[in-house]
Every structure is written in C-alpha cells, then in structure tokens.
Image 1 (spheres, rainbow, N blue to C red):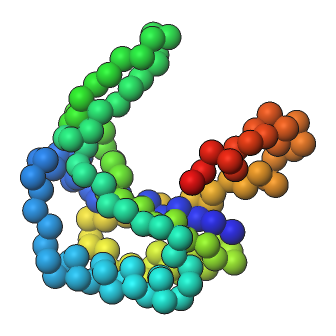
Image 2 (cartoon, rainbow, N blue to C red; image 1 turned 45 degrees about the horizontal axis):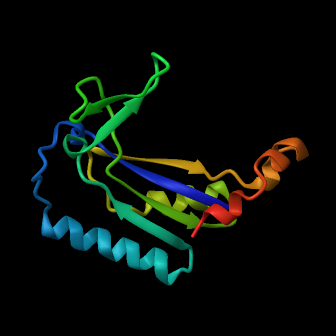
Length: 134
C-alpha cells in the first residue's frame, strides 16, 4: 500500500520567499529520511517552497483565474511530503510518529488510490493512466 505523508507546518502560509531553515532541524529530518530509506519504505520525498512563491488556479467562474501567493485565506499549507510503501495504514502512522517534527507541524497521512480500488468502468475510463507516470 502506498501512502503520502503530508507535512503541514503551521505558520508556513505566511513565510517569506527567503525563509531560512534551521540546520539542526534539517539534520534531524535527514536522519529520519535515511531511516525511511534504510527500511526500504521510501519511494520519494520533497520539500516545497512557501506559498508566497506559489500560485493557485481556480475555476469557480468556469474560466481559469490565477492568484499569486501568499494566499491570505489559507490556514494550513503543505511544506513537503513523503511517499512511502508499507503494509498497512497502521504502519504508515507508525512511521509518521517517528518523524522529528516540531510542535507547530502536523503530518497528514493519505492512502494513494490504486486502480484496483475502482470498479471496472472507472478502470476502463482511466486506461493508460499508468503510462503517464515516469
């Protein structure tokens, strides 16, 4: 089973484009990342620049509308993610609990949808989906 663990750093929604990282926290997170890799569960991971450097495209009017960050209405934003492959939701939770997160960080765990999760008509409509991935 694949799970995405989403890092939600509270306050990151207002971080400036040149936000500075604490080298000690980065080192602690790297040890955690290495543990995921050494256990053979890590598929990929990345950190994200703050929302002040991003953009959102909304479609409420039927036409795309671009809003540059930061996004004043945002209460929680993503700071990064890990994609892991483990045997169960409980194992994904156990890995998230080992993360050296600070008091202002939350990890949301979401199972990745697999084609086998869907009925045949949806699988047929999504034919070729696997070919889109690199």
